[in-house]
Length: 251
Image 1: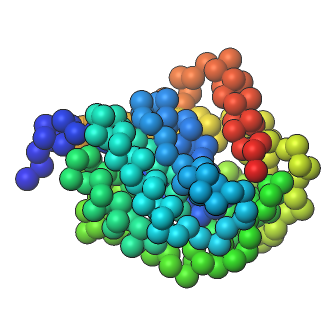
Image 2: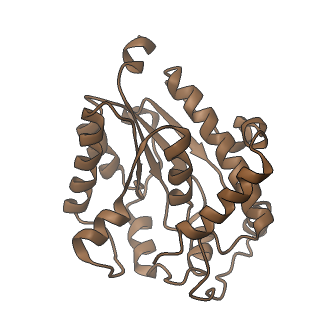
């Protein structure tokens, strides 16, 4: 039975899933304010536990620490966004096991193809090791409605240029950007503005669906429409662009 009242009494947890370079960090940082949620970054937890070495994969200790951090927030009655790959169904199952008893757990599945993610990551000052993609691809499986999420929200955040390039089968790794290039460095300001507006519209739709106790997706940025994103003032967008450029400036 769809008991939306009972679900709405619990905090919400949104798992933000995607390959390295999919745009998880940007979406999580935007959602932190829009959804009124705490943010848990598995990258930050990994670095705090293992230093700043490039990694092949998280081990179980990192996943456990991230889920425990999220659980502490949930027990305080606070909603949480967790930024991690979550392409491995075993990781998603563990997140549900830990968090579902006391939270409404949603999955935001960033569906950016791994080829595009590789291209984006190749332009970072500290490119992701190719072994990381090999590992994630080997364990990846698309989310299924039977896994137990309150809802699954697919998010296609390709730019028009990336979509055309991918459709034409012409995706190529680009030369790395200078070390002082900021986050989203593969995007021009105009492209980043469009991406931000789409992401804000998508997150607004996710917030509405979650508040209503939605049991099913799917939502995409196009389904969400442009109303919410378009409502953001030009000055706010300029501020968001500056913030976005600084967010990924760190390794």
